Image (cartoon, rainbow, N blue to C red; front, top):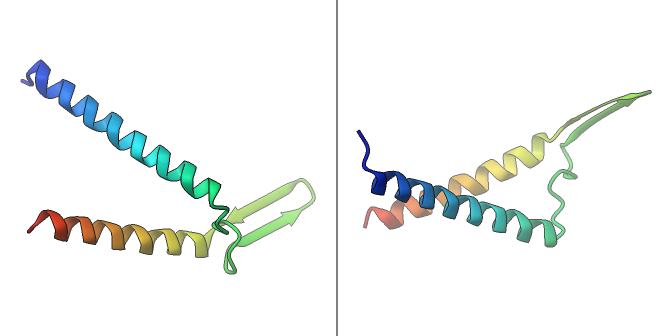
Length: 78
C-alpha cells in the first residue's frame, strides 16, 4: 500500500496544480480576452430558452493547451 509520505506528496502536488490553474484563470479573466465571444461561437435564444455552444473558443483553448503540453513534454525529456 501507499506510505503516508507518498500520499502527502500527492496531496501537495494536487494543491499546487490547482493553485496554478486558479491563478491562470484569474489572470485570463483580468486580461478581458474575448474567449466565449469569438466568431464561430453559437448562441440560440427563443423565449425563455437559450443555448450557448462555444465552438471557436473550444478550438482555440485546445490548440493553446496542446502547444503548452508539447513544450512541457519536450522540456522534460531533455
